[in-house]
Image (cartoon, rainbow, N blue to C red; front, top):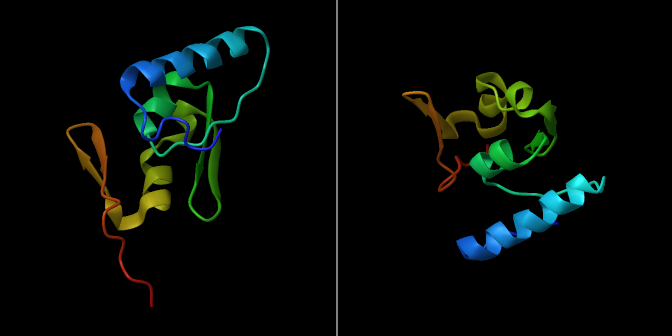
Length: 95
């Protein structure tokens, strides 16, 4: 599923997540792309972190680390009181 939660309300998101939970309980593997790190960290067993290349794949605690997030987001990631803030507004110009 490619960004299935973009532009949907919370109840629709929860309904879709419920279907994915049911499929998981039936042994079905689902692949979901999302930019929502909190959603990925809290609702999925494994995560893949990419930015033009694979940075890490595996359990959340092994993938969403300070080192890996810095590799993925470069200067656009900030750490505030244990929270990660990603500024995707205006990436720096290359070259």
